[in-house]
Amino acid sequence: MSFKKVKMIHHLHVLFVCLLLFTGILLYFAGIPWISKMLMRNIHLGIAVGYIVLLLYSLLPVYQYKKKLGKSAGKQWHILFIYLFSLLWLLSGFILWINHPAILDYRIIALQLHDWISVVIIPWVLIHVYWKKRGVPFIGRHRIKGIEQALSERLLTRREWLVLATGTGLSMVIAASLKWFKPFLEPWETVRAVGMARKGYFRIYTVTSKNPSFDPKSWKLTLDGLVDSPQQFYYSDLTAMEWRTITRDFHCVTGWSVFNVTWSGIPFVSLINIAQPKQEGRFVKIYSADGVYTETYTIEQLANQDVLLAFQLDDQPLIQSQGAPCRLIHPKMYGYKSIKWVNRIEITSERGKGYWEALENYDLDGYI
Ligand SMILES: Nc1nc2c(c(=O)[nH]1)N[C@H]1C(S)=C(S)[C@@H](COP(=O)(O)O)O[C@H]1N2
Ligand SMILES: [Mo]
Picture (spheres, helix red, strand yellow):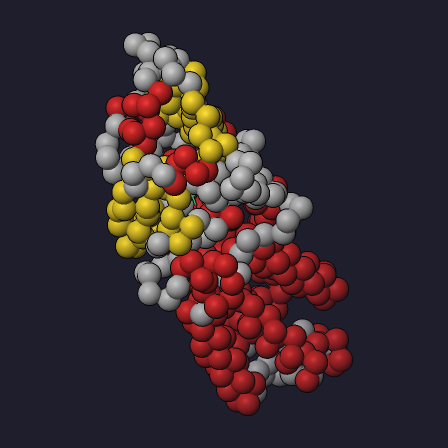
């Protein structure tokens, strides 16, 4: 085991952590316009796999290095701490990746953990870099004095311990404020819609790279398929219909929730009744203007008055990223059934799979 190798491992480690942080932050916030969240997620996962390979590869050399350190506890503790952190980070990420409702309880914890670790790592990396620039030695000292000599010394002085403890404390405080002030870091339109009163906030999800635009004059909603009376609704037709308002909690299967969300819109059943489904038309397929996302339901599932084609969230028109002008809201189903930018409703005789059901075996009904 050469010192050079440990240094290389260290630098690769830093590189992977920074790449994970960067792509993770882009996922946490709205993402970047020309890369869809799905692609970004896959890039993030790919880097994570690379990171796992690096960790496994580095196990033996780092273990040997650690043994050489002998009883200098500070450095050993430092290495263990980093491995524990990485392990929790990867484990929580892994649980999030197993996107199955059966483990929802674990995923709520995993999501919190994943967020917290990520957000603690940011100031931690900054402090680490600052220390190095100031010449507080970790690996740096070895380069200067030669590894044998450095190993024979106490590796962390009392002052360095103090800086480490303060830095960690500071990281936690900065991390807490970052999480606490997350709504302030959102785009203004989201802040306006979310406000500060509601509990929790939406993580805006879309599987495409661009949000469909909405022009009230030209926008149309098609209702067709196995119906006696196919329809084309303009926006003004729909705003003229009778609306209903409900307040419910919103749950995403990936482990986040927003509580006390108020939705207003047309009870879905009113639309169905206007179109008059034929006898064999027992299922509903809903399309999104993003051209990719679809969802399916049985007619009975949508027959409840609380199922809305929602146009407003907390008394404000839906913002573009949240489905303007309308999205489906089924209060008893998970967020993924709440298809955004609805522009076509088709009555069918057979039930197909929706976007996530086809891609990742999500439950077809999605009941909470
Ligand atoms: N068209 C479309 N609708 C969608 C999605 C999507 O990616 N595209 N994501 C779904 C998922 S998984 C959730 S949890 C909610 C999230 O709603 P929000 O983006 O308003 O937070 O939207 C749902 N509707
Ligand atoms: Mo979701």
